[in-house]
Image 1 (cartoon, rainbow, N blue to C red):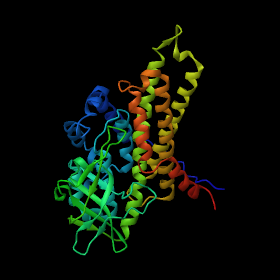
Image 2: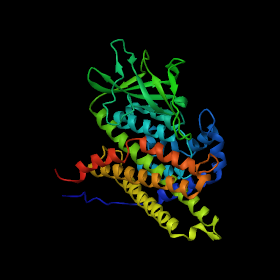
Image 3: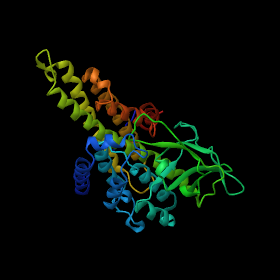
Length: 373
């Protein structure tokens, strides 16, 4: 048995500054009452808040300056997403970042016009899943001889607010990326999903009869798609780790104020020990996401980078599930109600497990990476 030796983890001054700025932004602009106010809205986020994030350069933070990005590399997005998760802030940033990464890695500066649009604040959406199964081939949408697409994609994140769709499709056995303008879709193309986490939105999108504006094909497409899925796992893990930290903060505040039988419930070991387990799991997940941030770059992801992304997703999912469950239990009957924030954490935990593969999915692939056959 052999285990990968790469344990690189760096935390640059730039990442530290991004973490401080992003945490301050969430604290000042998106307190919990603001988040709750958006849960029942059509988009789930405030467009003015999104524009503020664009103005700070976050929409293009992982893209090079030659296409209008910040040129800080994809690893720099980790502290931003950790901070956004620490406020349960739902915006199209994850979708836009991943759409940009897929286009950049598949076409480079040849697709500069699309990347510049994403950096400037237009929302990108990654249309991948045909049957909502991360193990499927996911190329049910095909390109016809007439130059139009045929088929639909399921659970397309932020489809309702997207300006540009990057559609994974099939052209006579070849995997291609079809770039579609949202304006070219029919009025009934979108069928909105009901997802458990109301800070996140998605829809099924019927692309039948739509002619792509541009098609990306070639040897780089498969590698770009693989790497973008791994980066999706890493950035989702970053969000989830931040959410686990917020959940832990809520738990500790409650344990220090709630009394039972004349004593603070935080004095009971039955509650102390799980709380410490959440803290350890959260810090463990943080180590994994910043290890991932240290080894991913603009080049095709190495085996070490793949391992880091998958391990980060496993660690973050597991601590979030445990933290959300304990938060509900510790709050007693109130923890099961809509008015208690615990319900938001357990919903985020359930959502995160479905995005870019859950713990079982990634463990199966880590076994092949880490263990000799």
